[in-house]
Length: 188
Image 1 (tube, rainbow, N blue to C red):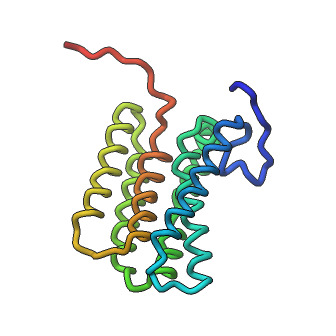
Image 2 (cartoon, one colour):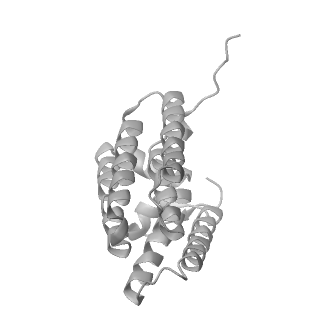
């Protein structure tokens, strides 16, 4: 990896053990943009300060996490241990619970899409062939996003954004080990 930077241990879950400035900066710039967009979308959501703070933390984690999970250094870090991968996925039950604190009126929709996302993530993660894993990860993420936008839950915009990011972050961004893909011949 060019221009390698050693990452402090407390940030390994985000950036792996070593990364580069491009990966680090783009992850945090996207996280910041996600927070600004989410807060802008939440202007009319009647949220109190603690809910806005929690919403900002969720937006930062999800927005930055989607991109961080696509970086080689983060992929490599989690690929070193099956247990680490499973713990990471399991801990993502916390994000929907936090979403329910911010948007309690939508708890049923949050629960439904979160269960779908977590099952899709564990399923994608369990596939060993990279080409199949990529196809299934994209399929499950996109069918979840399509359902999110077509099932009539009447979700507000900030929550829809968070759930979209959740659907991208886990079954696609994290669970697919894209770097294992090798060129393969298409038989005609």
